[in-house]
Length: 53
Image (cartoon, rainbow, N blue to C red; front, side, top):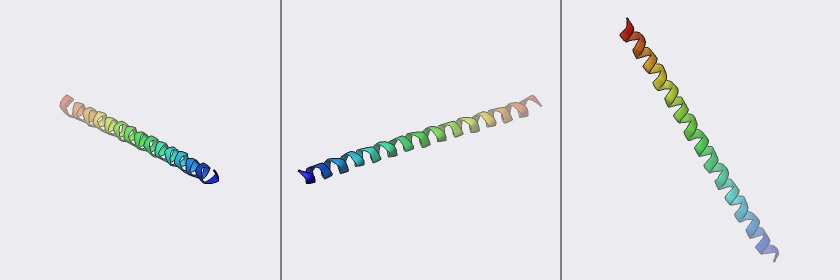
């Protein structure tokens, strides 16, 4: 009985860890996207300035 409880706790802990990991990856991914978006916007502005001269 006690062993089963420990196993269940461990399993839920693993699920929690996986969930946290996945969330972290998603956050990192969106951060990268945001960064890329900002970068491309900056490049676009830069290009605009060059073409306006």
